[in-house]
Length: 461
Ligand SMILES: *Cc1c(COP(=O)(O)O)cnc(C)c1O
Image 1 (cartoon, helix red, strand yellow):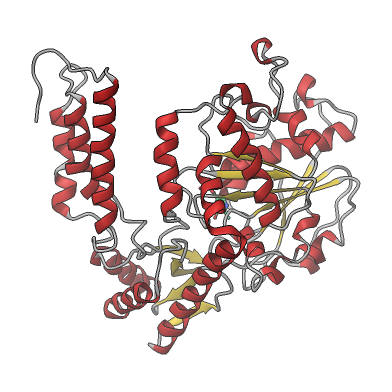
Image 2 (cartoon, helix red, strand yellow):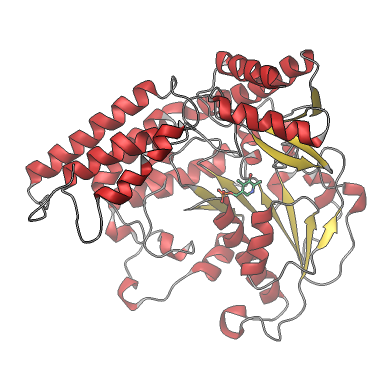
């Protein structure tokens, strides 16, 4: 496979097309067997990774055909199969076929979405997909959505916007004067808020050390009867979809208690916000539309290709005041400019696969995909419960928590299932106890996939 002599650049249009066809053919072969593959790579596949290091080096490059061949022949076997229906780890989505196909085509376009003038098609779909997101997720129609790398970045984008807005209303201009000497800003957060929101507080200069916690109940929801009272500007962080249980905070009951004039409510809804797209699950999010900003993911429950997150802010001016850039060469180019609505300047057209998926599934198709995952979660809980396994919390969304006696045995069962190749689910610590966490986030998962995973768990237990 190693190439000697002059490096063969792929230059002509014909060889570029050939190379792309070759990659597409290999990708098509990959997806045609993805449902039959073991969920984790074999030991042999992992051993072969070393030959990638050996075969191409900075001083001894390969030609492009060989690079693609090596990627497929060694790389494909060393992937984790999170698109094959039996991966239930973390909250990892699969990929909707039309989203993958659209991103292959959009990859050829190689559009930079920073400014509309840089790509009319990317700008058009960015605006359209953003509008559809707000509609589909049941948020106030005046809100603005902006695409980013994931819910962590969406949390950061929203928290920076909240910080600037709350302090501006208190007479302080963070854009000009920074945070040193700023008036105090209180942060209140669910005790079980996701770690990415805590990281965002650190990055936004608010720190995580003085967060005032809202205690949670036995389902992991912030307790409406235990919301601390605060004075002065306050940022309140809540969540739709606790990452362990899938339960959402009681938004209406909490927001009722807050002083809207000096409080900004941000909701991390990385996966849980999708409950609003499914009529049978929507009641779990009552009052969520009264928040000021929301973070969610495309790459989790919508099954866009990685990576894709969405930040949504009720007040579009607040977002653009925090995210705008002043670049002389961008002046006067007009239109909705993602570089003025997000942390990045240059950025890929993440909205293209989002649009393609929504244009294909429509409102009903998304609702069905979300509902299907919830039903599979219930199937897991029912079958595992019937097998005498301890279901720690009854599922309401796509997350299931189970335990197998003591912590050591639970960890041993998790490790055994992970090694089986039949299914993969991770471990967590839930209210002091080790648990297996099952997340049904690949919308291609079938009831048969669930049954096979249950069989692997029961065998391991
Ligand atoms: C996954 C997740 C995040 C982080 O999202 P990324 O897309 O991985 O950045 C934040 N909050 C919750 C509740 C999550 O499940």
